[in-house]
Image 1 (cartoon, rainbow, N blue to C red):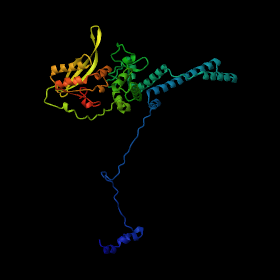
Image 2: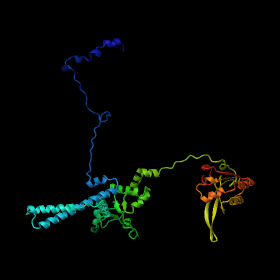
Image 3: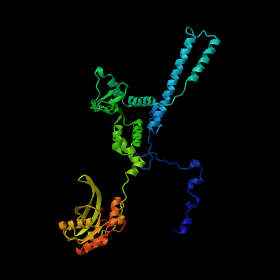
Image 4: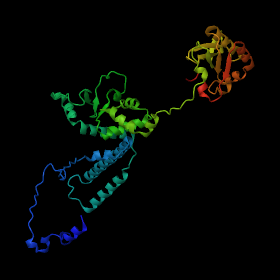
Length: 407
């Protein structure tokens, strides 16, 4: 657009003409305010609703603990305090009835002071005892009974009225377990081990639900007690007392999140191996042409009335890994040469023999190392030269050259 046309156009400088007139004289604009439903530019209004479930006070208490033992201990303290309160109330009633057996309203001030003094004495006599094994067992049974009443209320009601003809539904999670209620009011698995020589808890384990914080705390406690041994060990220990529905999936979740278990199950580091020695890669030759040799033992052999030591000599083909075994009567030079002679008579004359050096037999017996050090290497080499056999010793810490230990 040219500058001259821009300057000749008054709308750029003055704006629309109606803006210079009073606002009453402005033209009326009719805007269509209808909204299209399929318009993507329109923000949609979404209504949401939140439902809140009211939890029992005990459920909130159980969720605050991360260990099964701590929960039992705190519950034991609550039972001890409850017993003390009951004892205190009982003693107070006994003192009041003893002082005023007829009418408690007709009490003079002197008798009331005497009653208060006796009640204070009873309060001082109440002592807080430490939790015992009986108290811990009582608290454990109370917690489990509460969990069963919350999650298996319908099943417990049916089993309590089974004499009236009520039967457990086939759709129930406990139908296949053939449950029953014991003398303590706990729900247990009936099973088929009634005649087994096992503890009562192992024959009839206590049933617990899957979606319960108590079940998770029990499995985590067993997981720590067995030393992070894995799913099967945890499940075997759990079955000695409890039967948690869907315990396998809970155990898998706990083990997968456990740092110690992840360290135990971590994959081994793969070491990059060096190249194989050339005598192991020679082809188109008979077996035992390239031989690896090593000693093992000793073994106690009964000879007459005495015990003598015998050693084993293992020969391996370095190409096809075939094995030939011989017996050495001792660890001296002559026994070594005789073992090689027997190998030659059975397998043919080898061209190359590789054996461990005496100094790198760290894992062998003490006497084996001492006897190898006494070997007459010159005598063995002379025998090898006569048979046109080349003998090589492994240098220490060279695992790729080991004759018989590794592939």
